[in-house]
Length: 193
Length: 113
Image (cartoon, rainbow over all chains, first blue to last red; front, side, top):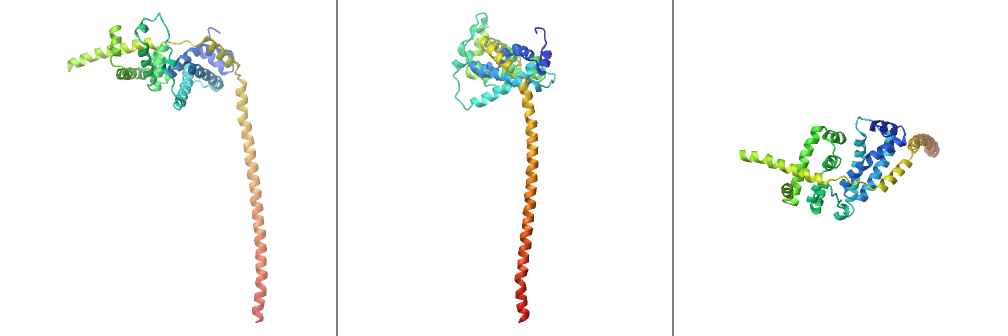
């Protein structure tokens, strides 16, 4: 079913069409995995929670109510709730060392990444993970998924203007947090770029 | 003051651009393992929709059992209460009757004196 839209696939899946659900799975598994990976900072947890998201979606899809939102909004909502539960449970368990959590990917075709030292990247990712959940979600949707403010607004249940304002505040708080952790990091980056 | 106001937005803008470029460089999409994606797809597809309808039927059966048990419990309780009241009344009338029997000879003795 290559030309089937999300809406049509969703309607079919709600009526019990497994293939339609499979199509939605193929379209969104990567995005949900990325979202969870950047929220948890752990590859194994990303796999485990991604699996849970799709099992939960499969169980609940017969009761799905169309509110005019894209299917991605529903899947991100499930992922968001599961990640929140994971963070709550993790508070009772010892933390995973950062070097195990974030294996540095090698991207030779990304020149900017060469400028960013592993340590600085780790600091940045840790700082992002310390942000409130909605701000983390905004950054992931913007920079990992490259979604527009309008699309992010649909997923997060906010207006485009509210997303813009939240984005602005997020960058400001990120700048302040990073300067507290590593004064001068941002200015080094400015000089280099 | 004017200088500061003029300078700050420019510097601030540079900072924002630099943060955005850092975020662009750091937040790279990761690709899940193909084995994971494939095995999860198989598991998800094996998960059957009819189970959901079976689960939906169960609560209605439970509801009927619950209603029947509540009704029968109420009925039983009613019968027991009635029985207890009946017993209480029967014991009460017997005691009353015995009390009257005891009082009669005393009265007759007084009248004799």
